[in-house]
Image 1 (cartoon, rainbow, N blue to C red):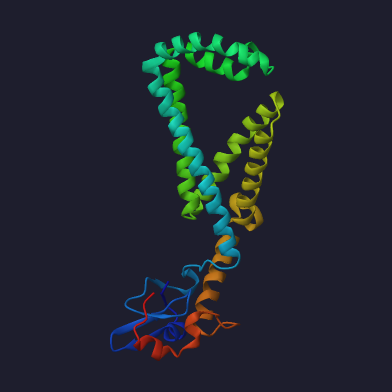
Image 2: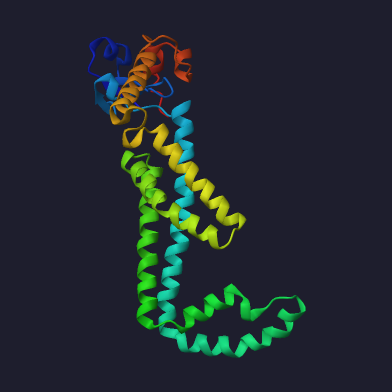
Length: 261
């Protein structure tokens, strides 16, 4: 993660000339790398090294991204299954009607009332649904899965639009989850509601979305302050030394060895 700040004092501390060409100091590890810097501009616009609080936030957001990605995959597979089911509905309906009575003796022994089973009722509702209805259900699930996938990508890449998208999309689903709890309370539903509410509050507050905690202006000021501090510490002009591998060797010697990582 090399960066060429426009401030001459900082730029001089991060840059050396070697027989192999110019070398720039990495903001993350402190080592020098031969070649042009990966970025340039004001020190306050430098990329933020993921350590400390920034690393913790990135880990949490990417864990949420993985959860959203898995959910998107399952929903899209469900949409595809329903779409394919439209073309084999008659065969599935015959099999269901013929096999269900065979399960009754087993169900009676374990105390399972098939006639009142919500699972059996849901299967029967799907089988008896019209072909157009199934098509629209598949389309709806496909759109929902696509939105979940977009949310997962935005969170994984740590993009601000992804954070906004995640908060809005998750918030829209919370009333539905509360409504489901009024019909039946399960640990899975309660857990999903708690996770989604916590995710909305965490992202909105820590990322200062929708004007919270100073809004976008405060977020940009915090980001620029962090970026400037990263550059100053890498250049050795900040309030404290940068504890990295590259600090243990002189800059010129490290550069001459042409160390690559």
